[in-house]
Length: 180
Image (cartoon, rainbow, N blue to C red; front, side, top):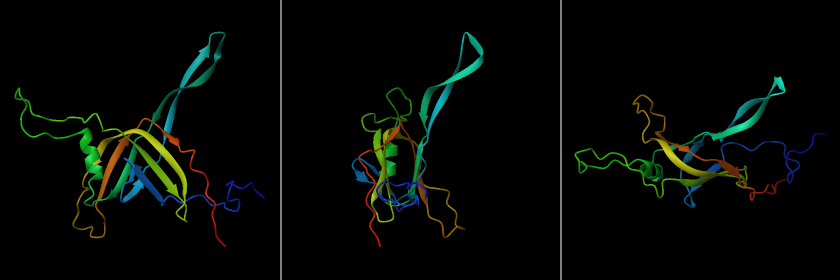
């Protein structure tokens, strides 16, 4: 018999489903998020050789990059996506003192946020959480393409979050699953 994949629930062999999750920032859950892109980390290999052994090439870890995370949700009256996106780019009305157009300004104090992505099992127990650090909105889609011929589709808004890394929350332990 294969070794159990789960330490607490040794009879469980199925992986967790990808449809039960929540996203939190500023200490509260954000309503209606229907899709979160994957957490991906890439480390560039650095190639080098030894002087006495020119025929062998070695590799060492180099620069590590974290891919941007995209969050999607249906368009509602909740302004959370827009409010965060506006901290990075805010259109000012009028003209500046030297005749230049007032354009973009960054609200440096609050435009970066830490977020938490939580995964839940079928019994609504938190099973995993990842803390993502120093996120900021690099792309915001307020409205999707609108099409009168697609009467059954939902209007989806998106934000793309640049980030400076993530770690698994070690305080979230495997919960005991009950059932008959």
